[in-house]
Image (cartoon, rainbow, N blue to C red; front, top):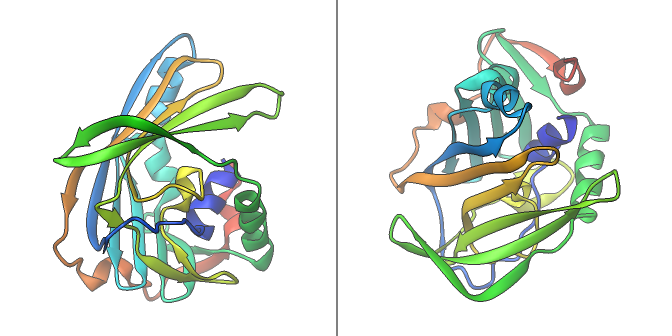
Length: 230
């Protein structure tokens, strides 16, 4: 779970040479658990109903809605060179350290590369999405597959993040060579028969209100390591 936070906060560079338009606005991803087994019930309680990501000019705000994970994660904000988590319920801001950023950079440097599957496409909200398959090695020596469907109608905005300069906002989807904006992610879950499906159900290019990216005044500031104690 720690590395999930680090990946979401650290962000990464994607090669998006074929994308035509930088996306700004709101993306809403639904979560669907397509799984069976004794661990499926626990996963369902933990999993959010959806993820909302808002993009502005050099800004991103991501939040989970529903499930235990929503209470754990808070709002992840990248704004004008700063990355942090805001937990409004605790009136606390959790900031990343230099060590956390280095951990995220190392994780991205070691990412596997997705392979594009020629000729396989899927229509999502009217956008043609191309299929990529990402094979991920597990710590136990096995392998799992993640399928990513991305449209090249958009590219992710560039964000200024600590220690990395300008990078793409969608690196946490798992691979640095996907051309376009991920619209559907099918994630195999080790030990569970089935997996998780994330899919964009709302794409809105309307400008996002600046308040979504603001750093709250009067909140207690703590290191991100304090948030990882669960």
